[in-house]
Length: 330
Image (cartoon, rainbow, N blue to C red; front, side):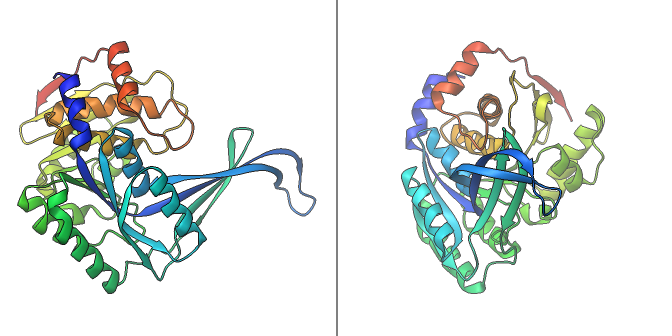
């Protein structure tokens, strides 16, 4: 694989990211006393900031690689929705597929003191999107499908990804030759049939396959079961400090991790699916694209908070680390 040729192709890639858009709010402070009202710490707030989460973070990872991204999802008619849209535009992410619904914008608020999370509270409506919004999203995807090289489905189980939407995406995009990658959620695996690839972590893969993954044998069983049950082309199981395993119909490729310092795994799955998809549609075979994604993941877990990886950082990781992946039959 000539990385220079693949990376040159990133700028011509255009991807639709369909899924649950989340606004991440961070409140930073210090704790030096306990409340007299209850045995809880009192956080003296020093500042706050916002970042893109969920499907919005996937899109952010796509544009970090110099590719183009369009978000397709629903936000609320509220201040948080306006903030989310503002952040997307700052990242040069196309917001034409953003629709306002009669639901609040999903917000995850983390209170952090002395570099430790004190509490997290969520504001969300997890009911399925309305039929009206579904029709608008379906029409938007259909009318613009010729613009995109791939579709990433980022499912955070907040009501955006439904059985009807997935059937439409498979029928009108995947079966028409568009690569469809899915970052899955436990409880929704039956929705992902006939897609190009799903990228569960170990816990999600075990739940989706109903296999307790405790060794190489059970890992192979889970991966092949997901392939067969969902009839997808590939399954990529991310395994944390053990790297990742890519399954196709005949083989499984085990790719060791290159991460040396792990500070925060928040958003690492978003980075994997974004990088894998960009690299593949830019010309890299799936196995090579997974290796690129593995290096990208090693970059983001070395950073605090929801982060992204750039082409330069990934190339530096390649220069500093040599991988000896293992291919076996399944």
